[in-house]
Length: 375
Image 1 (cartoon, rainbow, N blue to C red):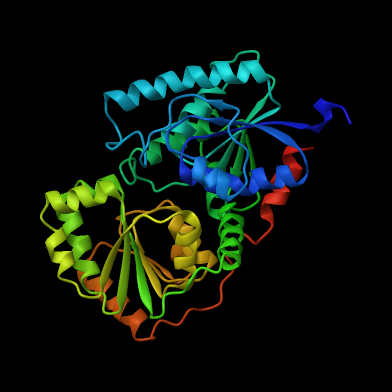
Image 2 (tube, rainbow, N blue to C red):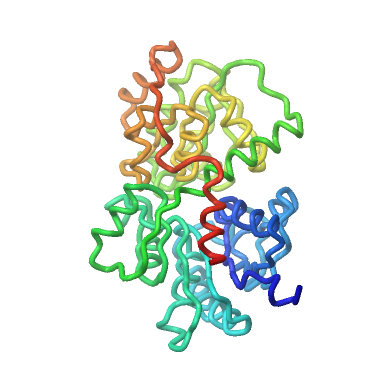
């Protein structure tokens, strides 16, 4: 077989850990089929550990130096992040012109996603032959500030994409109704289903130890929550309503604001609360799969809660993942009394989880995406 016949001609642009986790099934499937691909890393997050865990090849291009900690951007929008974003558009364009792929794939709604969508678009590449593909297209919260700047980023990314891979019927309809979408819309499901299940199987093989007692899992990190004293206080009040054991792997940025607003001492008074350092994805998925319920303001965790059928309280005013609200196990609230009632219902066993089909699809859906890209 000739060398060029082994290459899939697919370039995958990734910047954050969440993007890599959700692109991981795609990359693993290509590697299984012995199809080479280009891995372009923007450098927004350090990705080495995750690549090692999932046996993903090292990036072919690293467009900026990786940070040592969680992210380059402690504050989402500032002069440094804006300069980085515009420089990344040009660096993406330059890298793609070197390799001239057939497809350029990027995921989600981060600054890296947006830079990849613009940098690979016709606006910067008039004579381009490749098609740029947005994986996880069509998510909408209907508010530019909930979450910010992700809602803006995903809309820009959808606008510049030739192919939009919707994750659900809801997101497909969002795209079809939009006057600003000209690309081809396809629906296969959300690769998070495969990511979560692959990871859980790995965790079981590693024989991670289950926590002996029932517990709630907490994950809070959104900037519109942690930088707002009133909101963060509300979240702490909700967490204080937990009666069973509670485990909180804490982001450094969240810790900073808990201390700034003098809320950490309230949490330390909770005898049932265990605050831990952040865990890796393998351990975190294992914790999700074995917890009683989740309290979060994150995005992907809402989806993962559906994979493992775990009740999830979403600490936001709006969510772009509205499919979960229809399953009966995802609850969108920032109201302390309402959250208290939901927590009590879960902890006393009064919440009955009805059978539902995961709106994001079934295991193995990534194979269909790969089949489409290898046509």
